[in-house]
Image 1 (spheres, one colour):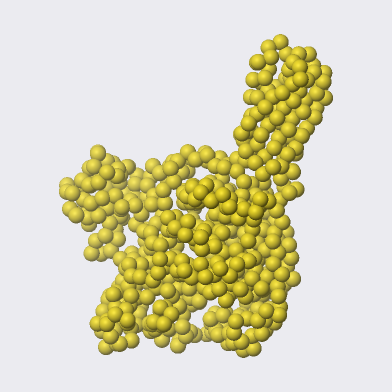
Image 2: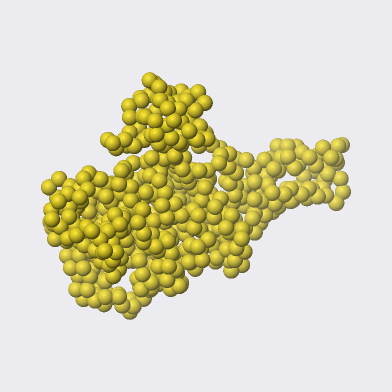
Length: 610
């Protein structure tokens, strides 16, 4: 575990960065670390970045002690190994603090000077696997989203490896890295950063008699994760990094969600003197963060509190946003809405009809009377949601949120010299002495005020003056403002250099090649697609490796998803509770069918391509 100089455990808020700009927004909003995709081999193919932009983000992040993690979390084919290694080395040279990987090939490339984080794409679900990854050279594992709090606690009890847990954003209904649903419908693979999101599509449910039980519903689509209310329990379970999903989200979303979690985590850390945030500085907010006012499909705690029904969104996979109220009455071109929430011109609204989710825009309002762009589908009793908050979005986009590091400023001066000392909140200190020849100032109080004013002007730096002391053994000399400004700039440069010279080095875990993999055989779901990954597993005692699923010509007859989500449970048809829905169940979309297999012992659902 990572501790500070006083032995306090460091706790991290980890934010997504689609690009340099959103990464910078995340840092300003209070993130302790950001994760970003490189030029290739990231699980979000649409969120790639140049090495130059990542290096620029590192330069912005590191003075705040904010870490930058590069996602190389896809599987690598044999003919891509050279490019993958080159990309990894370029990322390390850019200064990133860790590589997030799925493919064990990276562990056989002799890469040094960087930490390795085991991607959630490795389907990290057990303490046994955590122990193996720790012994294999990983400093952190990123937990599967579908774990219960007790399962997280069991992994946390393993110790000596950091636990990163998703707390907000989209949920993969299937276990990460074990889902081939997209690949079973097309050549697009989630393990290659190109998931077609089949879990958001409509399906028919077919019973054992071949009858259609449900038609055209989003049977695998689930709401978004929100564990902001469960931070204390996650800390107690051993989580050290709280991760926000969203490398495809825009800057306004990132600013809002990061700000919300920053404040929630800080409130909890204030109660725990043995813990502290892992980066430096504080953020001044000019808006009130609210996750319900950014993109959301509705919120769930998913499986954290145990496996239970009520997890799916059969009606739509789209963002419904914030519930506003119910329509009381309608007119030809307007409606009256109940509740205390106010709609505004420019807002986007949506509502459910027999034809699914419909949306429109608000043209104008008059109190609770709303004039939408279209009235189609709006009737008395219709429940209205706001999926685009125009005023809030405008406020976010105009935000001047600033992050700064507290410094104590001490100035001593007499008629022969000035000594300026800066000490930051992490204990780094620098001093600068300037020799002068000056007469005593005629107005001593005014001179003292001038010195304080000029030395406090840190607004264009990463620092803010927490305290300013001005001392002299005799009378204060007259010092021009230009001289004070020049001294301040030089001292700030020195302190920034001092911070960078003392930037924490990565904790490099050493691989124990003698430590055995928990099994001697690997199935196709392990997706070993290259000789380097094969060598890694064989070094750890694996004897037999099945052909990888992502290289199979067809996945007919193969398990294409394993999930903690169970459609039977969701429908109130659990096999342990005398269900009325009999026979093998199937999903159907067009001409393709998938068999649903229910593993009641593990309380999991498997989906098999027919």
